[in-house]
Structure formats: C-alpha cells, structure tokens
Amino acid sequence: MSSYKKLLNQTAIYGIATVLPRMLSFLLVRLYTDYMPSSEYGEVSIIFSYLVFFNVVLSYGMETAFFRFYNSEDKKENVITTSMISLLVSTLLFLGVSLFFKDDIAVLSNKNVDYIFYTILILTLDALVIIPFSKLRAEGRPIKYAIIKISNVAINLSLNVFFLVFLPKWSQNSSLLQNIYIEDFQIGYIFISGVVASLFTLLVLLPDYFKLKWQFDLVLWKKMMHYGFPILIAGIAFAINEHFDKILLEWMHVDLANIGAYSACYKIGMFMVLFRTAYTLGIEPFFFSHAKNENAPQTYAEITKYFVIFGSFMSLGVIVFADVLKVVLVPREEYWIAMNIVPLIVIANFFLGIYTNLSVWYKLIDKTKIGAYISIVGALVTLLFNFLLIPYISFMGSAIATILAYGAMMMISYKLGQKNYPIPYDKKKIGFYLGLSVVLSLLSFYIPVLRETYVFGIASLLIFVYFVYRNEQQLFSRILKRK
Image (cartoon, rainbow, N blue to C red; front, side, top):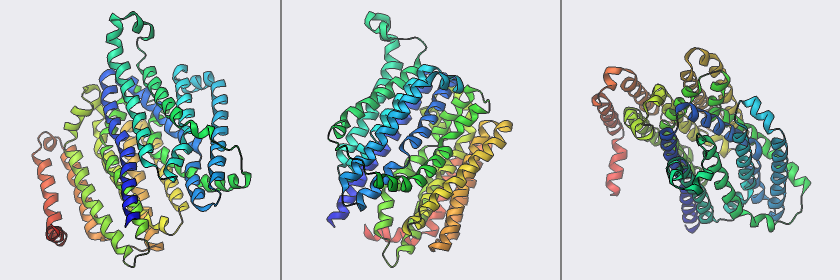
C-alpha cells in the first residue's frame, strides 16, 4: 500500500506542477489581450508556436530515452552523464549557429531581430534543464521539481505584469525607470520575461553540471538516440497538431490581427486541455498498475465511459457559457471576431482526451511506435486541411483541421486497439453521450436565437444530466450506498 500511496502523492505533486502553469497561462492571455492590439498578440502567438516546435527538436526524444535507460541500466550515472553531455553539446551548437545566422533568420521569418535573439536564448536555457528536471523525477524528488517549475511561472508572470502594466506608468515619474523603458516594446518585454524566468531555472539546476562526471558512453548514446528518434517524430507531429496552425496562417498571408484573435479565442477552448492534462497524469499510472488484473479490459472500458460522460458535460458547459468566458479571459471586442472557433476547439480537445484513453492498448503491449504513427497521420490531416481551407475560410479552416485531425486519431486508435487489445467499450452509451453533447453544443452556439439567451443552453445541460442519470442509475446507487 505504501508504494501506491507514494505514487499517488507524487502524481498529485507533478500534476500541480504541470496544471498550475497552464492555469496561470490564462492570466497571461488576459494580460496580453488587455495591453496589446490583436496584431501584436498574433505575432507573439506565432513566435510561441515556433518555440514549442523547436523545443521538441532540441530535446530530440532524449528526455523519454533518459527514463527508459535510467530504469533499465545498472550504471545509472552513465545514463545521466551521457544524456546531459549530449544535450549540452547539441544545445551549444544550436546556440552558436543560430546566433551567427540570427539576422538571416529574422529576414526569412519577417520578425524583429531582437525577438529572434530572445527566442534563441529561451530555447537554449530550456534545453539545458531537460535532464536536470528528469533527474529530479527519476530520483523521486517531486517537491523540488514542483517548486522550481512553479517559481519559473511566477517569475515570468510577475515580470510580464511589471513590464506591461507598471513600468509605462512608473517611468513617467522616475528617471531610473525611464532608462529601461522602451515605448512600443511590449513584445520584447514578454520575451525578456521568458529569458529571465528560464535563466533562473538554469541557475537553480546548474549544480548538476558541476557535479557531472565527464564520461561519455558512445554505445549507450547510440542506443538512446535510436530509442528517442521515434519519440522525436511523434513530438514534431504533436507540435504540428497543437501549434503549427498559427505559423501556417501567417505563411498563407492571414492578417496578424486575425491570427491574434484566433489565438486568443483558441485559449477559451483550452479549458478541456486542463481537464485532459490532469486526467492523464493520474490515469496513466493506474492503467499500468492494473494491466495484469484479469478484469483489466472491463475496468478500462468503464473508466473510458465515465471520462466521456464527464468530458461531454464539461465541453457542453464550456460551449454554452463561452460568451461569459470571453468577457473574463478576452474582454476586448476586437478579439471576438474568432469566437466561432471555440466549439470546434473544445470538441477537438475532447476528442484528444478520448484518444488518450483509447491509446492505453499500444502502451500496454509495448508498441508505442504506433502512437507515433497515429500522431503522424494526425499531423498530415492538420497540414492537408489547413492548406485546403485557409485560403477560403481563413482561421475557421485551422479550427476545422484541428477537429478533423483529433477525430481521425481517435477513430484510428479505436479500430487498431480492438484488433490488438480488445476492450469491451460500451459503444452505444459512449456514442450516445458524445453525440448528444456535440449536437446540443453546436445548436446552442451556432443558432443565434438560441445563443442570445441561456435558456436553451441551461436546458441542454439539464437534458444531458437527465439522460446520464436515467442510463447510469446503477452507478449512482453504488455511489450513494458507499456514502
């Protein structure tokens, strides 16, 4: 029991360290959209998308490879030193090359060279802490891990508030602050905040480099690279699915103001991401711990049904009250031109959550490469429909591409899973709850007369609850008996 309790405690702490930064990112959305025009926020969103993409490239699957070989190799110190030296060398090489060509990169990307410089620094600093963070997790030190992660976010948020809110006002009465204040430099201040936060993180973890025994195991490194390559491909595919749409919108000459509006409204749909992330952190250890149980497939089927019930209700609620959320998160009306994407993004992220449930089969039978292949299919769908639809319907094309990509991944995983690791999903009920939620969501949002008041939306939530109660009376009876 003590091992399960330890696992639960560590999962909770890692969950806080992962979910809390995402929650705080909502505050940054409000801050940016309050103090920046949509065109500038569009530029920020595009650079952030490049950051995510190159973060994946610079880690090249080494983080996952570290955990795989740290747990299987007898000489754990070899795994630590080899992976750290590998990332150190590749990161410094990236730093040197990218700084040398930063002016050319700025011209090619049509971005301010200062923004390129700050982006390079953030990428470098973040890459250098990948293995020190992994080492903390491998050694079972979740509290230190969480404190550093949350401190990074707190510093970033505090500096953003200082630079965007207080510095312009205070500089008017202070000659010292006048020296550091640059007018119309909001985007630069956002990235300076990121540089400082990332630098703080590296300084805290820097002792790991001083303790390093500079021994590089070439044979082990080749095995780690071979293991990590499919993860790199899957990571690139994931980055394309999650973030490449903003880059494609710019490439296809969509106005920056529209990209900013799209990015801001996209965040409203990210409430489902919080739910999905928290759920995944808790459920994956459970899946593996129950894998050898005789009734494991039945358990997985039940969990998936409950996930669909709760997720359907949550996605319906977010869509019904999307116009309330926009006032809280994105109050400036210039951003609301992209509100029509919200239901599509919410449902798309719900599909991705269902895909996470369905993906248990290839993890349990050690065929994780299949996950990479499915992600690649999703990325191809994303790229194809973005290229086809953006010229005609602008950012709505990106939203449609997102829901099609995640829907395709969900269905492919289900079909392949039933062939390789059959799970007795209650297809009728799952399909009914999912379909009912999607239909009610689309009706309540896209039919103006229904969207103008919340009567139909609230009625939709009550209708959904009624059907869940009617169909799941045995579940509710069990819960009541336990109480």
